[in-house]
Image (cartoon, rainbow, N blue to C red; front, side, top):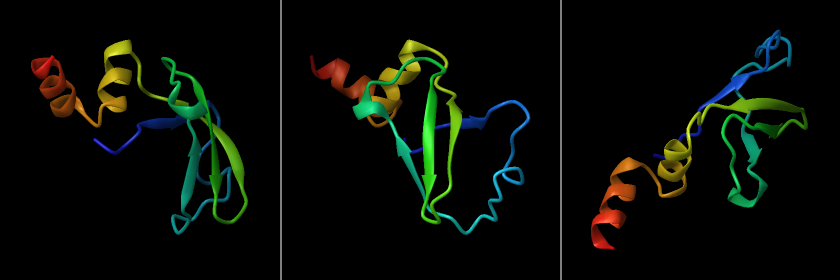
Length: 80
């Protein structure tokens, strides 16, 4: 999968954080211990830092993400 869906918090946007699209982002995923709809800290290569909401909204979605996507998850389950 490789893409973590996130959402700005209410009232926030790329504009309110002064983002122009050229930034590189680092996400603090708490060592991979993700929870449904948790807040995640994002830091840009320009030093800006803000929180977003992780849009993994169910436990199965978290499992899919942690396994690299639904296909990898299903293949691992079939192998067990």
